[in-house]
Length: 76
Image (cartoon, rainbow, N blue to C red; front, side):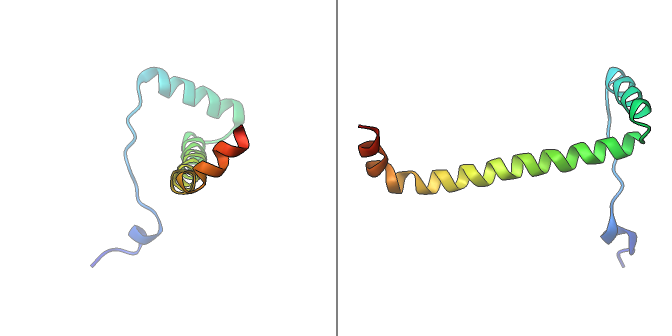
């Protein structure tokens, strides 16, 4: 049986270089936040930013060929 915590969050190990740990620790101290909080926010922002870009790319890849002739005419 899968334990209940598995459905609400999963622990993971993130291996960073020494200089990355130092920079993250310094930033966390400046912001008075935990390193985990900063990393989780960075992951959320990365997924949001790249997810939107991927969606836009997929839409453009699908729609641009459909309107290529019209776009070419507009460019003349």
